[in-house]
Length: 174
Image 1 (tube, one colour):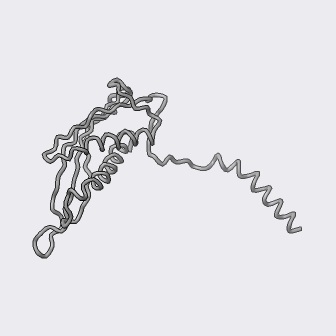
Image 2 (image 1 turned 90 degrees about the vertical axis):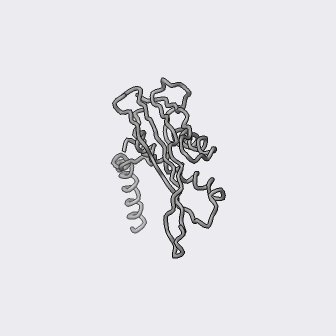
Image 3 (image 1 turned 60 degrees about the horizontal axis):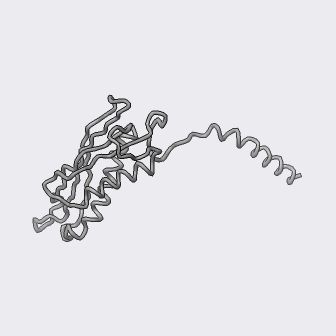
């Protein structure tokens, strides 16, 4: 009898499971809220460095990170056409170092690297959704380290944060 009861319970569960599948909420993890029937293409202008301090690889690193993120998290096709459905362009306006934590010897024990980017988001299908915004992100590092020793890793981390912020503010529609 217990075996028959087990079979009945399993059969009942298996028959109800497909019905419950339609009721489960679904979430997208990339945060994109893009109507792909309206938007199919995006293009990027250059993001030249206009900051007082210049780290030459930063421009290419930032542009590649943004393009890769769009290609990986959306179905938009990245094109070189200025007349694409969506367009991002701008400049890197800040690359700054500032002391943060002061030790007992009155010297900074932490230094902050801050990168600031101005982004013009152009929506050619719905111009009222276009925007011109500035985004900043930073990382702290020990003042006992030379910037040249940690610069590559810091810039990688900061450009990831910046691309997340920009994605959420434009394509994520947060």
